[in-house]
Image 1 (cartoon, rainbow over the protein chains, first blue to last red):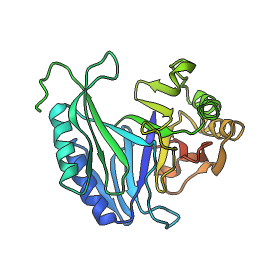
Image 2 (image 1 turned 45 degrees about the vertical axis):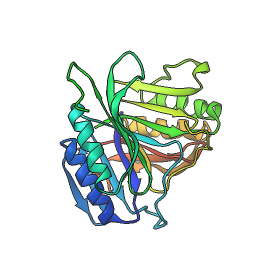
Image 3 (image 1 turned 90 degrees about the horizontal axis):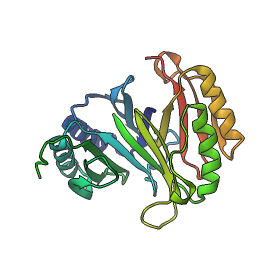
Length: 130
Length: 125
């Protein structure tokens, strides 16, 4: 469904530290750009963080959330821990989530700008590690 | 990479008009009934949810955030943009090739009725 998603930053170094660490936990590689960084590949969808093109301060939305896929519950835990260690704030600790018939395991954080992010994996018999 | 994205709305009926029209051009329909109070467009590679923020505060837009939707061909990009303009959106960049995109892929940009910046691209990796 998605080709790419961009979020803003006013501090590319801080953004690279946060997103390098959190995407590494999901096994997703990236590259730095002069104004930020990109992660992922065109066929699976890409995520970018950059100074806004209008050169104004980056701000976060109220009501906006971006959800990423995690390969398993251990990756969800690692992603959340990496976020908290790199300037993120907890918005919901790792754990099972009831959003329907499919058993999910997820976690929520705010990035350093305040953008709301989450990761989810479908539980397929693997015991949550926390 | 993505499971879903949530965009905030302050007027779900305006959002319904806009997203029903634009998402149809990309092959998606709202899968929840009107009483759900939100819009859910779902496909095998992701879900878009549009609704009021869960914290009860007004929806606001981010500076720097753009949500990019995948289109199957260049014509779908044009139809998506036209449908958005006819359904309460505003132009944030007309359909055409983009130098910043891989291989000058064709894309177009809109603001939804709440001001969220979205785009559609037929990416040529």
